[in-house]
Length: 260
Image 1 (cartoon, one colour):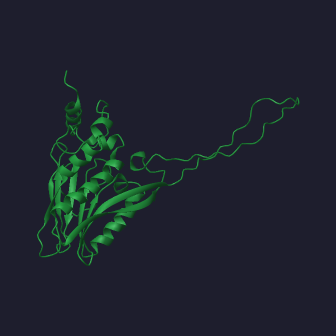
Image 2 (cartoon, rainbow, N blue to C red):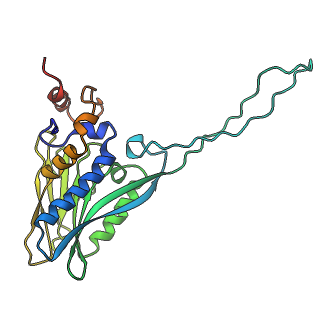
Image 3 (cartoon, rainbow, N blue to C red):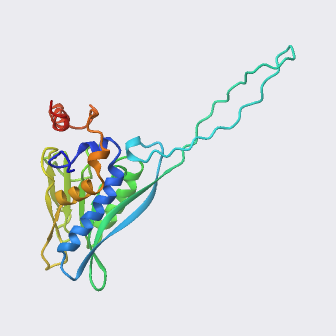
């Protein structure tokens, strides 16, 4: 069954479905591009494994937490010499190990020399907040220093947007197309929650023309293939602290509310 929303589905984010959805979406973006790229190009996915602090907000990580406790002192003997079933606690902090997070993205290469031409990043919660943001920004800077086109696609409501100079009429979602030959300038696409997902231009090596990436089609393939209509609980309310207006919040909940 298709998604009930015309564009991005906020329930995927708030119900913790984004990690699995993200990775499948990246694969479908790569597959769609390989259907349209010229014969001397290929799109492939790559993956990065990073450790994220367990102290980060829960929505930026996977909920794998290890808690360890050392034994306290032995039961004390009261003055009367008869042991009682009480022990004194010892105050200490639980141990929370770093969480392993996998992020994937699309790389477009020119053949036969496998020259990296374009990188497409679909942002994850760890890219936008918490201890993983610094790692991603370092990778972003390294890419911007190379003669490589960079596309960033932000389909998340939560977290801080990627740095841009000046003010942009920001919608709820955003895509940045930073062509190597035009930097530091970049094309910024922004759209609201109620808008369909756009078709984005994907630059290649000069003088080859752009190819198009249909985000809506990639979303549909991911949503249908993962049976998310069955997995997502649309009857549950959205969090009131989502960074959208009360009107958009009411619209989203009404949009999926069963008709009487």
